[in-house]
Image (cartoon, rainbow, N blue to C red; front, side):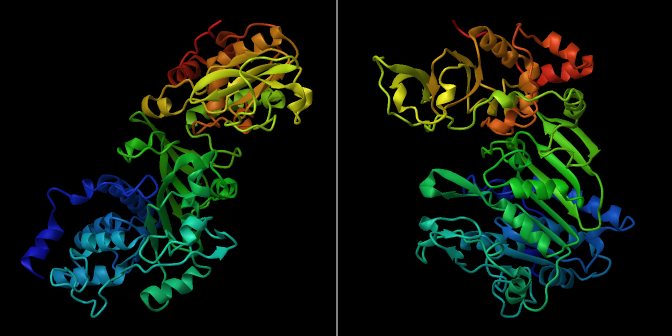
Length: 528
């Protein structure tokens, strides 16, 4: 091994992987410090499952990063193995060749990232290049980091695997089509044999998969990270660890089946949840936070859950993940929720309208600004501004029975980012009482009641910290859907509600009150 190569393995100052910019919010580079945090968790899990054995001193363990970008996981694993295998392979070159050719494997997500990963791991964009630290790849110029363009599996105008639309399906050969090889295969085991040669089995699968793919002309983003997790499990590794967005815990387009699968999977031994993704990825905005998990094929029981909020670590707390249909992220909330649910009261979402209750999207403009005879008020939000228009009653053709009710209008998109940054938030946007008769666009959900007095009572309940805390347990992003309100219990609408009365009713302790009020900001009275 050359003196130059030896130096590159031993130290990098500064580390270029701490400096590179992210490709996008979808394909996020993993900071080296965080990659090492995940590797520490892996090592602890391996030791616990193998009588204290050191994973970095085992020359038979194989690792796969199926979505490598910067190559940081493979590089940091190599660094640990080089130290851990020193007694077994005293010769440095022999040790490095064994690690790089027999233990570490990766699949690039793009041509660029494959080159970058090879540069990180082999110190050369070509594994057989003159500056490569590996000397045993023969004519395998790519080494064990593979990339070739893969095509989407088209079904009509979409990819049946990731949901990519025509924009991606019809991209030319000189453009990235984001058909990631690891998930675009019906038989990944056979495919890996083709890529790396022979029957492949990986003890550890680790990575930071792409998070989402723009679809429908950019009108929505479709999550795809769940496909990487599910595909990795089919390979039956001994351990699996990935960093992914946290929104799967309670929401996310098309993630219901994935959420049920994750919550019921007793092989997840560790879950570390960052309510603010900036704690991991400082330059990227990921609504709902981010998390990483450790999946152990031999684990069958509760999961150690840790929540990091504003630099404060709560946990690990040993829990079963499937107590509810969504994951209550902070274990300190569980006792409060159980007290509320013990009352077995109906939910307020029994009087809450569904999305697009009157059939109009948020950009509906089939109304006029000045009221005419036969018109009723139509409430909408446009560019954050709340406004009232007017529409003929006869044009309301959906949910006509709700026109003549008093309504408490609540914005469908509420607060959320503030809580991620500071740990304290309003959770929901200010409400608005709409008199009878009235309608609204998709900009609002609404609670329907029989009178102004009932609407005012309900509004006082909505403003309480208690109400918004219970909502926050199911609201992981800015969107507040019908199901977000499921755990909020119904009250009688004959009084003004306040937190003190609610804390007393549900036997909330002083410690629990302090916890609620440390998370939920007071909501100001509405402007008359």
